[in-house]
Length: 503
Image 1 (cartoon, rainbow, N blue to C red):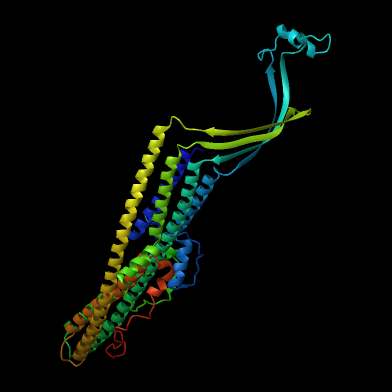
Image 2 (cartoon, rainbow, N blue to C red; image 1 turned 60 degrees about the horizontal axis):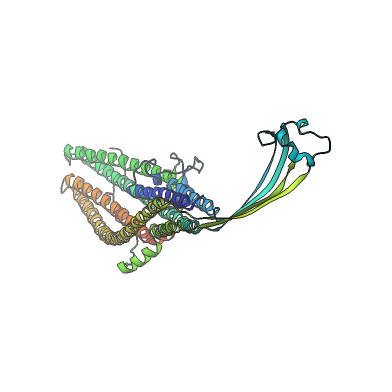
């Protein structure tokens, strides 16, 4: 295999592999629900279905995602491909030792080879007296056997050595790309788990409000029977109760779908029932300086490290195009035996050195150089862009984290105020000071505030995972960014104090 062929092989496979991983990472960021378009939302189903619900913490979910997520499975196979390609390229520089053996029957036309009765005087001294050449058959068959060991070694192939070193850097790039896919799996599985927790919280809030609406309906019904409240109050309470029932159905449906999506990402059967054992975490993060974040990101971002290795690959391939012009020196030879089958065998050997000097390949060499320089310039541009992109992502993450923290604080205050307002309107209704219209309005306000609070807590935790991802440490330190207990209690347990009865 020539040096130009080796370089083209390394470049072509590198572009295919690294391009595929980059495309998969971009698909994961957009997060479409179709695993054919985005392998991060799919998995290789490997966990057997169980009739009993499976208890699942976030750590369990992430561990299963790392094992069975489709995107990471593909990334591991691509890394194996890079390892295999390195072996193919290094074999060109290693000694080549082969064993060759053959046996067969050969038919020769001696007359076609120059043996003719007219040359008998030239060979008369070699034959016994009285022997005539005309007594020999000029068409003859010979059964021969050959056995030999062949050896070859490239003694000097500078371009081939450059390509082999490029393959080493390419192997590292494939490793970093696999690690980047691992980080994206942790990010996606973590976000999906948090989304399921948020859906569960919404369903819990909806059921709690349903119980409150049921109590209000009971009170309105009893007061209407007693003649102390108008029928309109009972009708309004019944509409509110049934509307809240619809909200319960919708939130429970969202929760079940969120669990199915989580199952798909971590290798569980879609129909597998799971119980989320973690609660939505809430804790204040120590603020991080942008300069410190940059240092950590440039040191830990797998995509940044992979692109740096791609740059090394391109630089070494560019050198290989220069060294293609250099002579190559190879040594080859063989040792073996040759003879008539079943007869006498003779030892044979060959030893030779070959010096190859390319003379009329200037167009090819210039074309290889221009292609390599274009690829090198492209990677340099991508690296410069990624450097700025990391800075932008860090700034965005820090702003998102700051905003989400303040949003949670305000959302919690809104829920507390809405809960107090609902308690007071319920007290006024029970005391007969007002009808239940303010109660319905306060109920709606509380439901909206609770929805915003659950959403803000989810966005806060999502922002934390996003920061860990942009720092390049999500797969090893995600738990530190989600540490803390449950979100502060935001809902009053007061529920209008009457025993539950069917209206």
